Image 1 (cartoon, protein in one colour):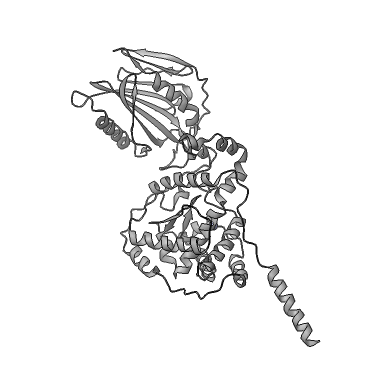
Image 2 (spheres, rainbow, N blue to C red):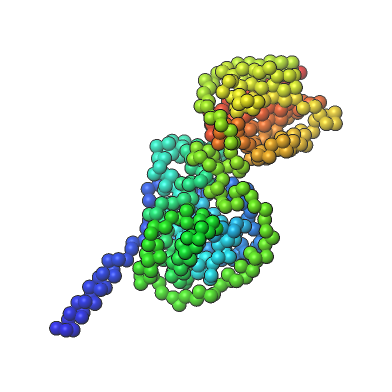
Amino acid sequence: MRKRSLALLLMCAVLALAASQKKLPKPGWNLFSKQQDIDLGREYAKQVEKQMYVVPNKELTDYVNRVGMRLVRQGQLEDYPYYFKVVQEDSINAFALPGGPMYIHTGLIKAAENEAQLAGVLAHELSHVVLRHGTHQATKSQFLQLGAILMSGAAGRGGGLTGPLAQLGIGLGANSYLLSFSRGMESEADLLGSYTMAKAGYNPIELARFFEKLEAQKGGQNSLVARFLSDHPTPGNRIQAIEDQLPYMPRGPFDAQAGDLKQAQAIVAKLAPRQKSAHSDGPDQVGSAPSTPPQTSPASQSAVEMPVINLSGRLKTYQSGEVTFSYPEEWQVGTGSDQSLTITDSGGKVGDAIGYGILLYRVPAQNGRIQLARETASYLKGLASSNPNVRTESDPVELTAGGSPSLITRLTSASPYRQQRETDIVLTIDRGTEMLVFIFVSPSAQLQVLEQSFKKISQSVRFSS
Ligand code: ZN
């Protein structure tokens, strides 16, 4: 009798334990294809690497890739084109973009007490990738508009997805759908992450310990951990939740002291300090309102709100001297000089600046004859030096305008409208002894409205001599 009740008790205990084993999470509803996750991650990775300093140390990069790929392979994570890079940032953080690219702050490498703790944060981030939390979240919040963008095959036209998505607020901005997650998603990433660690031979308890350490430092207003905890809001009992699952995970032997973390920390300690940039806290700091695209420099502080731009698509003709081109019928040719001209409407004028429209300049050759590539470069350099917010988005592309050799270059800069960036498409045309420069100006958020017109205008340029 005594024996039987003991067996019963044991059975109940086993059942109770079994009941509390959590099912490993699976990706949720998503309008993006897996390939679109990958494409999107690649595009955003380019932006990240413009904004943050990727440490060019092979030993360090190899090390984080070793740890990361051990988790991917032995942890049996689904295959994505994962890669791991170290960015020089003091805050304790790491973030993964959809489809695999991961960036690890030097602050995290410094703060980890052993390789398992570093691996734990990586496993947590990898879980966000595998569970496709970024695009799942974007899908849930913006599915109506997203459907149209994804179905139109925006990515297939070579235009990239980030432009159209930025207009829905799906970028790397603060509270981005792609990088800041809900508490439910955090629980899922902790769960899959700790199982992944255990399978890969890292003691999952170290992830709980690392979180514990961050939580303890939070009270001290430690700004270096604040970012991590705001991107990964604690589901409350995250440490307990991991500990509860330990009985169901592969068991060691785990060797917390194994690995080359100490060497990696020595490399990090020797890095020369870098100038603090405005965005030193990660890509999340860049960009502001959800309606602005991902930004490479601060948005405008202007008080003027961006108007909604409407164009019928109908054009009228401008002709002066030897040059003829079409421009939107809603716009007016301003009183410019022979050397420069502005075409816009009342909404496009913001004080002395142009928020959208066409600027036309004539630039005389430096040495009698235009050398287009060189003089375009020096013109753009001049533009950039007069406005520190100018960023070149693309290398010059060769084409012809009105039969003359031309280059087209895409820039971004601060818009005169509040909290906006602007895109400037610069067309430079070789006219022998002078260079004709068209600058097509648009708030980046409304480039879609204007880009077709800009294209038509540049194709309409004719020279009578
Ligand atoms: Zn997270």
